[in-house]
View 1 (tube, rainbow, N blue to C red):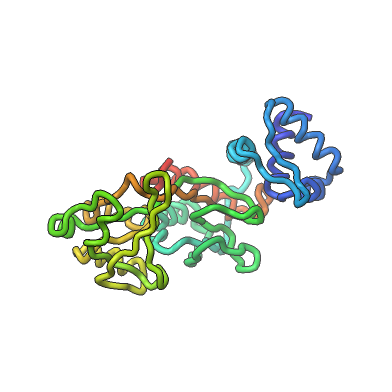
View 2: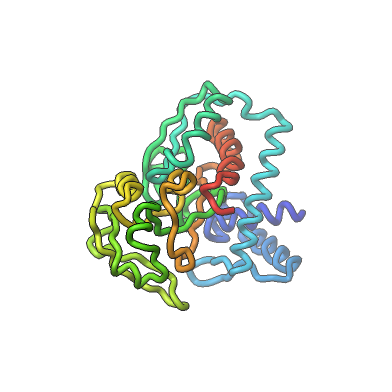
Length: 300
């Protein structure tokens, strides 16, 4: 079995979540799938899958290899489609799910360029928090922030984002710049109702997690309104880095406490059917992925 085929089998196991499911998908026997993975692990001299009573899990090395493997397979598929002239004229309605504020901060410019390149496609966007159920919700593509369950379908990583705390220069000039999380006790903040009743901000602090309860001067219904209030100098706000990208780029907000930020989160495009996806889905993935990866709102 070729190296490329071994990677295809390994990727199928990762996407399906089990050796048996991958065997059914590829129309091979489970023994053939196991042998292919074993040969791959032997060639790499590393353990990629950890077998257990509930199926298989990726080892740390397997997680890294799975991402690289998926990228290589997708790039190869793109090159083959380009050479064969496939998906030249996509048409129809394309449903794309986005996190809140992703449209304003990142997506709209890419969508306009895509529609100019493929005028027969009609884009329909919808806001969705978390990982949507593509099939049940009739969604073609979703841009998702956060870690994915094994059942999320095919995924293309496009970058990372992080939680940040920021405020306007006017606010910082008046109230000072917090140096450590405990300084927030003497600061004002702008919250949203989505923050929940606890309203605790999480930080990494001296190798532990530090929870700080901010003092709200204003609580908004939406993050969009809260960010706008923060630009007017009402207080500190905690949000995802992409949610305030334009405000940060234009100097309306400045990040603080960056050394204590929580861990980055991955951003991925997820979709169904892989290389068998319809033309409008494939062309969108191929078009949007490099542009999202190059977008300054995302960490490379």
